[in-house]
Image (cartoon, rainbow, N blue to C red; front, side):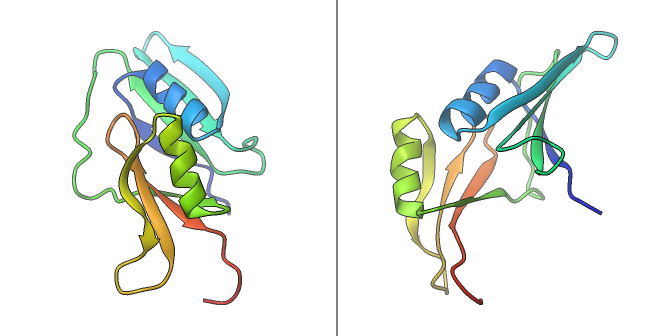
Length: 131
C-alpha cells in the first residue's frame, strides 16, 4: 500500500494553484475539468505521482469557500531549515501563522503557514537521527 494524495476543497482554483506552486514550490502535475459534475481537479506536488504523495485540489464551480471544520489538522512538509523556509515563504507571499521555533513541550523546530483557504501547513526540519 502507498499513500497517494490528500484532497482539499478550494474556493478559487487559480489562487490555490498559485500558492502551492509559487509559494511552496510544488509543480502542477495535471488538471482536468469535469463539466458534467461542475468541478475541476488539479494535482500538485514535489514529484510525479508514481513515486510521490501529492495534493488534489478540488474546485466545485458553484462554491467559493468552505468551513474547514475542527477535525482536519494540517499537512506537514519537510524542509532543510525551518527558519530559512519561513523567511523564504514569507517573501513569496506566504502567511506565517506560527513562527519557527521549538514545539510546545518539546525540542522539534517547526512553523506553520496557511494556504488561501485556511488550511494549515506545518514545516518540519529534516530528521537527523533517532527520535
